[in-house]
Length: 165
Ligand SMILES: [Zn+2]
Image (cartoon, helix red, strand yellow):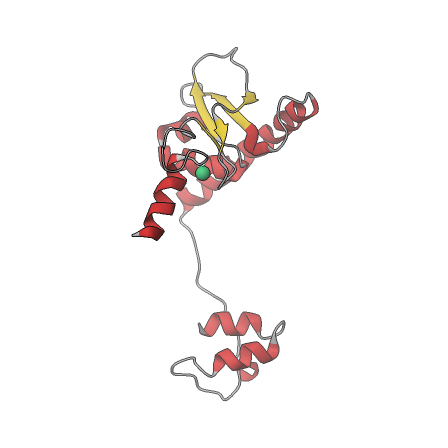
């Protein structure tokens, strides 16, 4: 809360001061008199390497996505499925080994589907399978399989049902 008020202070000075009123343990009457301390946010070396590799891979994939957009195979990147060829020991194979990382990467590239292939000749970018979910705009193969919510995907059905409970 303290840090948030300080970050907002130069932009929304009155709002930040109003919020400052509610900061517990504050030592000054106004947020504008507080010194901004550098945060000790840091990530491990292996995390840094992971993200460096992911960003590099993303750089390689973006022009391919753009190519398919120009060929009118896809419109928005969420309409795409990427099939990634992974060679043994390559960067992409580390990625493929961890489904959480793969999911993070899918979000980073902002496509609906990601597939790992061992077939070098497989097409890299194609149109995603399934249908577009009305709620999240992802293309999913389980859209239409829920009677109560025929236009949204399984993940969204779960999210919607959570609100109901
Ligand atoms: Zn959805």
